[in-house]
Length: 449
RNA sequence: GCGGUUGUAGCUCAGUUGGUUAGAGUAGGCGUUUGUGGUGCGCUUGGUCGUGGGUUCGAGUCCCAUCAUCCGCCCCA
Image 1 (cartoon, helix red, strand yellow):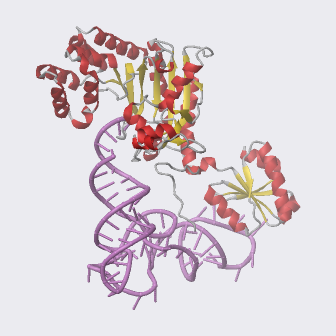
Image 2 (cartoon, protein in one colour):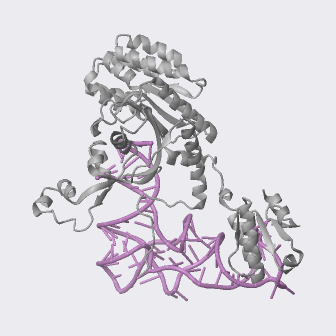
Image 3 (cartoon, chains in turn blue, yellow):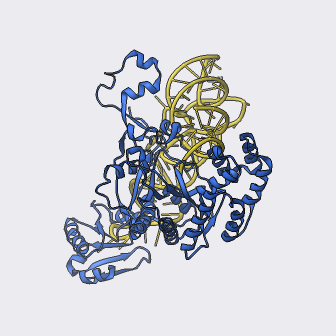
C-alpha cells in the first residue's frame, strides 16, 4: 500500500536549514551582479529540442532530459521507426526538453530579442538546469547555475569587470579564492609555434588534465599526436615555470615571438591584469585550457584556496554565441558561478549562517481562549511594527510551546495568561538568558526593534 | 556509458560459521505534583532486514537478478 518515499535520482530537497544557507549565497551573488549593472532575466525550464540539440556535442545530447509528447505520442510512430533504433524513435515521440545550461537559452533569447535589447547587453540569470548525468559527489541531476554575461562588446574592460565582480563576491562571502587566467589565443600561439595548428583541440584537452595526471602522461599523449620531442621539451620549461605574472609574461613573449595570435593573447592578459588594483589572487596560468570549445579569447577559472574541490567559477570570451540562431558576429564574455559547489565548500569550511536566521523573533503562547484572542491582536500589532512573530496554534500545556520555540530557535516567548490580561502587561521570556520581564505593548515593541 | 562500494527503526549503526518472538544509541510520544524550554530520570510508539526470485527443514546472514546509494573514470558545474 504505502511505498517508501524517495527523491528522484540525483535530486535533493532543501529544508529550512539548507535554504537559509543557500539564500545567503544567492543573495550576495545577486546583489553584486546588480551592482555591476547586470540585469536579471529568466527563460523557461522547457525548450524545444531543436534549440538544445547539437549545441553540446554528442555527449551533451545524450545527457538532455527529454519530455515525452503529450497525448497519443505513438500516433506517428511506425514499426519501421522502432527498427531504426532509439535515436530515430525518440525524435518521433519527444520534441521538448529541460534546459541543460543557461548559455544556450540566453543565446536564443538574445537572437530573438535583438531589436529590443540595449547593446552591450549585460544579463544575469540564476536558474536550475537539468542533466541526465550519473550523480556523484558535487554532481547532481538538478542544480543551479549562476551566470553573468556581456554580449555585443569586444572591449577588454568587460573581462576586467568580471574579474572585479569575482573579487567583490568572494570578498563578501569571505571565501579565500584564486582566479586562474589564460587566453585561448596564447594556447593557439603555442600550438602555432609548435607547428601543430590542426591539433589544437587535442592539445587543449591534454593540457587541461596536466594537474591531474602529470607531465609524462600529457607528453606521451602529445607525442602520439605527432608533436615533436624537442619542441615539447621547450614547452615543458615554459609550463613548469614558477614566478610572478609579469615574469611569466616575459618568458612567454620570447617563446611566442613569432606567433601573432600568441602575442595578441599575451597583450590581452597584460591589459586585463593592469586593470586590476588587487592582483594578489589573480594568477596567469598557461596550463588553463577549459573544456568548452566555444571559448575564443580570455578564459578564467576560480578555485577555493582552503579546500581542493575542483573549480567553483568558470568563464571566458566567446565569439559567435548566437550564430546558430541566425545572429552572427555577436561576441560576448561571461562568468558562471558554480553555486552548488560554492555552497558545499563554504558549508564544509563552516562559513554559512545557521538556521536561527529564518526563525521569527517572538512566539506568543497562552492558557485559554481569552488569552489566545489577546495574542492574535498583540501579534498583529508587533507585525505592523515590523517585528516577526507567530502565535502558537494549539491550546495545550504551555510547556509544548516553549519546546517549540526552543527547537525552532525563536529567541523570545511572550506569555499571556489571566495575570497578564488583568495587568495589561506581557511576560516576555528571553530563551537564551532565561530571564523574564513584564512589559507593556510599546515597551515590547521597543525591546524587540 | 564503464568499474567498484553499501542498502537492517525517522537518523547513525550492531546482528558471531545460516537456527526460536531482529537489537542499541539518537530522534519522536507520554510522564517526572500541572504558568515555562534546553542537561537528568522513568515508560513508550516505530522495522514483511531495498525489491523480486533461488538454495535450505530453516535466510537479515548464502546465490542470482533488479533498484537505489556513495566512490573512481568519461564528461562536467
